[in-house]
Image (cartoon, rainbow, N blue to C red; front, side):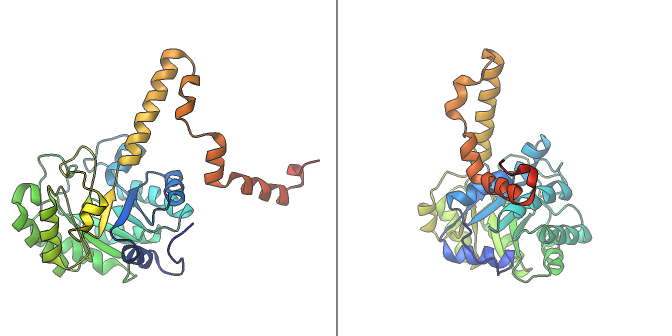
Length: 299
């Protein structure tokens, strides 16, 4: 069941979700079926990770290898089955001002509600890995201006991600974030934040919604939503948890079948056929076929 009004634009639904849930849980989905499961669970907003696309759709590292078309393909499939607003990771925007404009228009056309664009160099790295290189604050502001200029719906969210904390420290990272807001960013995503006090400083300095990325095995502690609410974090992102669990489970099934020649010892770990049918509304599709085609009608 959708939690926000389809009459609003995707960006409007995203902003409404932030107002409705404090902090808003953003859950990562890697495909349309995951979007259905997340919506059935009660989440109000979805997230498409650049790293998730790289690993799961392309089978490559999150090192700036994927393209805008790779990400748009996954976004379109997700928005085709869910009205929940989707925040999309667009890395560095995939080029200069005109490329960024194309990216924004492509994402909006695919049904995205929001994007975040980061201040790494084009040969980017995962936000929780060492060796990240940053562009100047001025160049990042130009990226944001290009993104804002390209949107056709004022509610479409342009979020600025800064990876500066790891290499430049908290104060300079906040300075950058303030410049990004002045350039037109609606919201800010400070990456790899080590403690609650730092989140509080970002929020106090910026006065716009901020996002906490609570990813597993990274540089940020696994703070709960309740803990992050105490420092007024507006959104909590769980970008990779589901696909990490899915991939571990799939690997176990592959290993078991290869070793034992049967999957029967893994059945208890599997979603049943009927559980899947319920989520994709399989029986309703069958009933429609029976209505439309005589050959499918029971004799």
